[in-house]
Length: 197
Image (cartoon, rainbow, N blue to C red; front, top):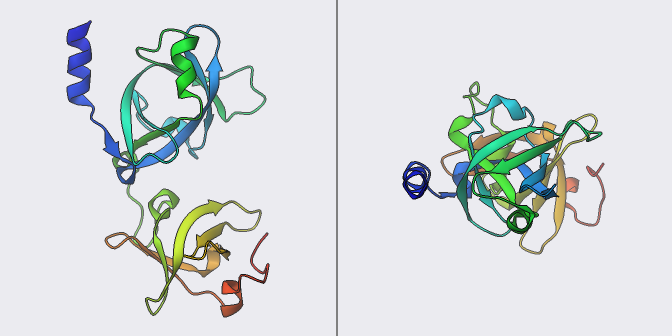
């Protein structure tokens, strides 16, 4: 058993969150055998290799790998977004409890390439948001899905938030992690709710 653990640790190494994308979040332990109930956040959860997840907690900058013993949709759930997960080495509910609230990541290398000019939302999170002339407006902290289009939530140094509709987003400079937008001036007014759903 020790030899197996050693082999696994050589194959899988901790990775920075910048090299990963968020697949799901642990809600709570499920049952007595160490399983976890997971809220799946990935748009197409079955499209990737899920033999291991990289686990981190909010605020951490690095995630640690865990092999998957089993993973399947939770049939008792009313939503298709809930799955049951068992990580190797987590034998009972007591060992599963510390994973409550943990975030489950997969390497960005699992994402298929996109056509020129397109990007995955996960690539843009944390990017510096700039206008077309390069002047910074803040950091992209979240992308909120809307009925007609998505909203890119930008937070500046004064902790003011601006909701920028997706049509005003022009592109992502991956090399410099900059997101370029062309938005009307009033969308940058923190006293106005324009743009907010």
